[in-house]
Length: 254
Image (cartoon, rainbow, N blue to C red; front, side, top):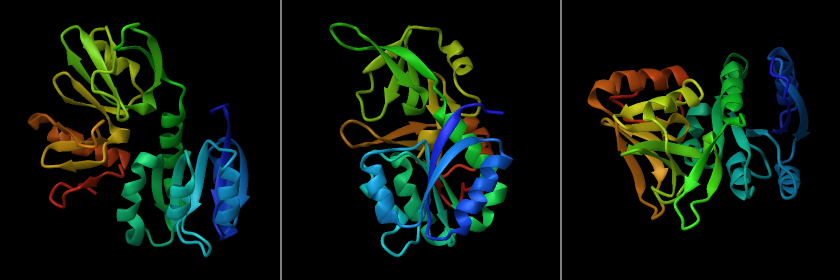
């Protein structure tokens, strides 16, 4: 059992949803304190001064859609989007991957998919970090949470850590590259090719053997090639994770 105490927020105009979620929190032994809003405007008022560990958010609400609410929250928490019509909103949900979208689930499938939600949340909420050097005159040390890292790449004796939209060589560590996988949460990463490890939570798109990892400092897409021999393994791992990334129709394993 995970003994950490979490604070969740549920925003849904259907009163049955918090009842179901409360049952699931107990069933899956999550130590949770939670708040329920049936009105997205009241939820927005809450998020102006407070936050939570995980937000369960309905898409279709009278006053404001869940997506509109997510856009108005300054620093959105990890979010699970709930909908009655999953196919209708799936494509739009991908836009919010960089705003801490954790999962996108049909309400009808909430119970069988809750274990997946729990595992994703715990993996990304963990207080795991790397202590890295910043490339500067002072060569300062910086603590970077693992869930903020997009990918690692090796160059000579250094491992560069790419975070958000920072410069590609802004942060680095000096350690054997072979040790790196042992320091990462299981199933959170993939050996894309020799000297490059990508973090699967930040993969936005997979197409013809390449992945897109968001955007760089200049707003250009970060594209990384997957080793040809690794294509099958990569798709299999994504399938096992039920990843939210988009894929070409030919290569979509779902």
